[in-house]
Image 1 (cartoon, rainbow, N blue to C red):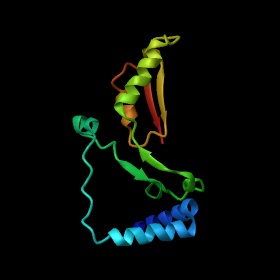
Image 2 (image 1 turned 120 degrees about the vertical axis):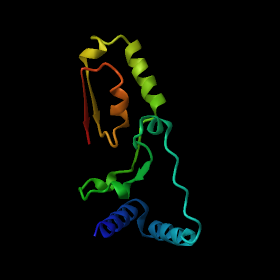
Image 3 (image 1 turned 135 degrees about the vertical axis):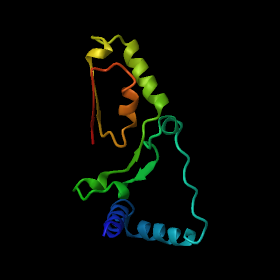
Length: 132
């Protein structure tokens, strides 16, 4: 039953974003490539390999679908790159926040697989919260 639910979610998303003809073109393209060799498993992001976690990858909208009315508006999940996170935090610290970092709570709304929370845990925040 989960496979059927995923297929229905994929079809709804495709029709919503691509329309009938775009969805049919996509299906035809998939059928042409179905006989080709299966794609290789993507390699782990260095952050994931270093910490023995799985926070990376690209999860497309149909696989994120949970039946919520707004699920059709979803696009995809992709984790925050550690370099971007470090640059943002560095910019914030250099802006001289009103209080020391250890007095702030770090909140990640839409935390996904949690990479940003794990990166924040290496810093002296008072508290770290993730909300999906």
